[in-house]
Image (cartoon, rainbow, N blue to C red; front, side, top):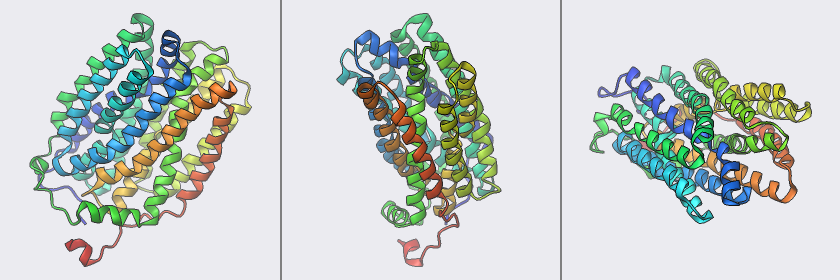
Length: 408
């Protein structure tokens, strides 16, 4: 299988610098959306479920769009996809500021930004990494890109909190919309000459054969199941924890610092996961991460709530936050090769986003009906244990293809 970079590949430094900067902006802006929950719902007199529903749609659209963004990026390169995603990001953020009805808010915060994230985050960037960086450095490079997304959270969440406090939530969204356009010039650094016309990239499989092979392979299904749980946990916590803490009498600054700590410590967690993926079986790394998440949430709920306990929880959860991303995507690349990596990563990520949809929506739905987030916390614990178990049987060895499949 075509598993190594071509003679027309981009330099490692160029791929990492431009890819990391794009992920920093895209993921950084996205991780701060929980800070807007209370300002927007109180200003518009909406329920928390209304806000949560829009973000749930965002995650679902992100997952669905990511599949097609991956197909386009695999065939034509990432440049066009990232530029389109950046423009959609700006339209979505500015549209959020002007949305006067729940439907308009869902269309902007949900549909437009979901499509934008599909074109500017991991599936597309990891496709560039897979096509341009050698296999013996791939997991490390993916860990570095994921760490950039974590740095974006550390950098952008406090910045977004400051913007809201200084300019109000509407103007803060407009400022972020303008800032998201910085991804357009960064995308030019990821132009892949061999994919510019869509025909130079050698493929040993058609899209149909690649999909049939992946979905008939049990390990691919297990990776998708684990990633579902990842999405449920991180998006529920990222969106609802600020309101959970404010309900408990804590200041908005505690929530901002908590999310920033998650981003700070996730820099180390994701980079470490990428490094370990070069040395250890990725399935074991994933099983440990999911089990550790379940234990961390359990201890957080059992301990007396205080500013210190929140910061400790955030630091530990940060080490585990996006550390699933490098080993999951590196396992997909290792099993199936890189010719259709963005597309296959998009399908795995779609499973992640179904979990994200349920996590964020159930958080708002159950809170509005019970006045508490407790049921969703407990569900996050149970799913973490389940995800640890389903990753253990994954087979990471490169798949052996029959000659007929290769010629097709």
